[in-house]
Length: 550
Image (cartoon, rainbow, N blue to C red; front, top):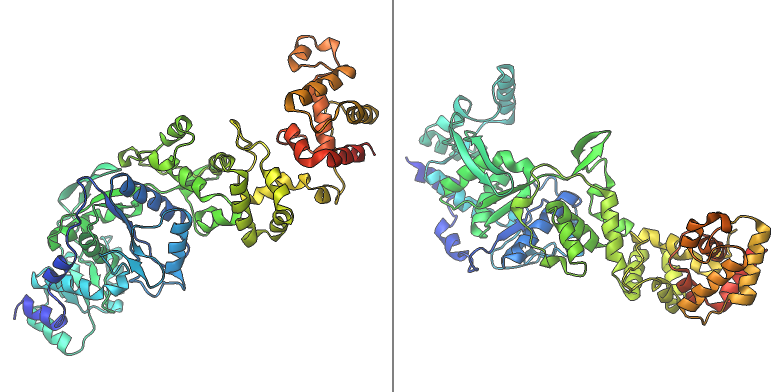
């Protein structure tokens, strides 16, 4: 008996691989077009590292006229969670990373290279496994788990590499006729790859990100088909990336050590190997040391965290691009209004060591992103967020939509828009004082600064109300009246005048305007006070100022 007999006993009914080679023809794309994928397992929440990978993969596909597809690697079905696939799809959609092909919900897909869920591709893997058996490059292994455990213990005691290789791969040497007999007798088995590698030899590999890397050849006889008939990750990814036309495998660098095995699988199967680009992980500083972002320790590790606190998706995407290529920040400064799709990402400019996660930097980017929104966009996005996460904010926003749009329009749409809002969770605190019912509902804390004499403050406010305040004034007239008020009370009209001759003045116009600001809002730092007064209106401004005097 020969290998073909063995293959036919194991897989009597599978199609020849020629069927699948014809069914999935090479993609007809322009030269240089990148075909890549995000291939997660539906075993839990989407990690920020997965989104980072997707941002890079989709960007590279888009800018080369290629394809970005979503493949669900669900062959480890014991670990699969309910709605795991839809959770992945929704996360990608939310961050603008929807794939060109692949799964679009738990059961439906788009594209001509599916199924895009590995559990539905069982017959395909079996066809290629049969092909390997026929070539003498794969074989059934009948070892029980207890035997494998015992073998591992012996290897560890002898301080040898663990695994199924060389003299330890005992089923590899069973004659074909005995293998067939065992199968016909109903003995349970798995299929292993028959490696021809020699760990004494090195392979030279060029990683698109890491550069040139040397590895020992793989000599492990890894499992390719499990007892349930489904493949392992290693085997499935080789078959799928070949048939789906993947040109670049962009993945985390924890897979770098698997390159020798994966290249060996491609070579043995007769496939052209894709290029590999291994991304350094996103790191976090912890007590002076760097570590990977942890699902268990760090809330920001889950992409759902950004939705929960209300950081816009665009801000997260731009931050991840900034991590990917450090020149993105300079490009953004030079192109403040450009779509980030116009930036050309380069894989060979990515850091080979992990970038530190910087929440301060992310929030700065988020402030800039939100500052570009119109008042209507802020209203719509904030209301949508609040409907899920903050019912009180939702009520505040919807109580008087037209007034709220005026509030949100303060310092918006000009050359230097306000940048005080970093996330929707901050919005209520940033605007609540502009609503009279909220402002007067609780005692106002007037923390005056340079001018803190109550009698003087009362006189300044009364004089401003009776002599200088006119809600119809344009901004220049308004500010000139503020200067007049300052002069009346012995304060310099200009800050520079005070700095040049401080002995001649009690302070400057900024000190006077601060008094008005604090009395009007209960805060020392607010957006433009002129715009605030215009939004509040005459009645509210006077009511607030007189309330402060009391």
